[in-house]
Image (cartoon, rainbow, N blue to C red):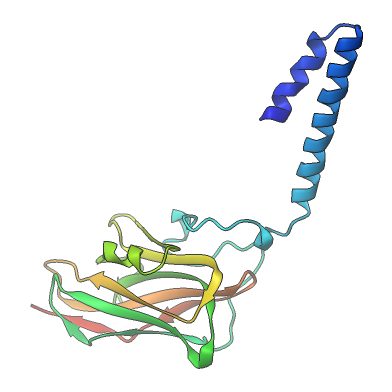
Length: 201
């Protein structure tokens, strides 16, 4: 913004020595700005700063990262999602563990709970206590629900996380957890599912 504002100074300057000095410094400022823009343009996207809040709502259903032309890996996932119990009642908290096998680490995670064999709508809520587990954890909302998706995005690779999820009230049936794991900008896995959990009063 400062670079753009400084362009106006040239037009206001006269032909005096003082004005010429002002023009020189303005042009120097503009040159520096152009160099900065050109330099940052050469930095690959995956090298730039990471925004832990940046999980667009457009991926709520597909859960596929928007990483240029990169496609999900077709190799077996080195990550698993497990739950603390196979049965739960409405309103209870289930502990969900995401783990890398044989020391595998991940830079990114995006996870939801969904009704088993019933579409892509995210259900339940991830508890606010999850935000204390790691500073890079964020809870987001996928309509029509709220606080029903959770993510971890960082440059610090981790091997596991334990997260809390609250069973929705007045719900019965089976749910499962689906996750997307990012190993690197171009290597990631989608549709990593847990075993189903039975919900009944």
